[in-house]
Amino acid sequence: MTSLDTSARETFAVHAHDGVVRIAFDGTHRSNAMSSARMRALTEILREVEADDDVAAVVLHGGEGNSFAVGGDFHEVSHFSGGDEVDHWIDSITDLYVASLEITKPTVAAIEGYAIGIGLQLALTCDFRVGADTSVLRMPEFQLGIACNFGAYMLERSVGRHVMQNMLLSCEEWPAERALGDGLLHQVAPAAEVSATALARAAAFAEYNPVAVRGTKPQMNGDYVEGLHVLRETAKKSHRAGFASGRPQERMRRIVGQA
Image (cartoon, rainbow, N blue to C red):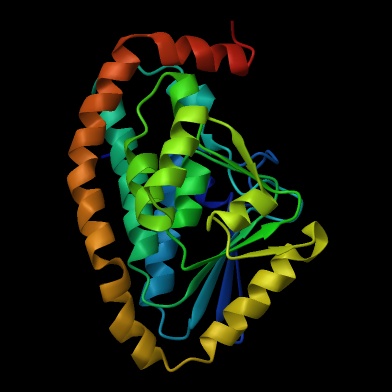
């Protein structure tokens, strides 16, 4: 396993106030692509937050004016060949989702801009999702030429089979009001108020008896986590095959202007 890239950790900012921790994705680009190194760094931060008894609630936010996260870093994955690098990438993704789901305090996603692919899946691991009225959610994996194992599993668990099928097969954008109606978001707020709204929600959740929350969240998420561990190996096989075909890399290089 690749050691943690300390520079990747610096792309996140952690702010604490009255028991609420806000983790901002303050990367160098407003789109907040998630490289393997960034995912491992965020996983480490989430595990530290879980271990801190002074933390009563957590907010994940893309940073002021940034998208929540547009998915994997095409500059990285467009160079995959379908070998061991795919396994390491899938491990980074799975470990991130599990770390978020295993937090025994309430978690809130504050979504501005885009939440796409890995970004949307990360948001789905949170207990409560606040989206800007200008936010857009999307699961475009089939258009990119890669499997959508995590998306299928997480969407069906979170919002049901009908929405999952529609999102995966259409690859369409889900604007905020549509996302709210389909249960992808729990609340919509004006773009300028998303962070404050999410923090207010987290502050209210932080007032709950922590013993009660800790005693409930394993039941909320235990089967979910178990399923992700099983899915880890399936996803490795399907993504190895996808990248071995060469089609995803071609598509991703066109998107980032490399071809």
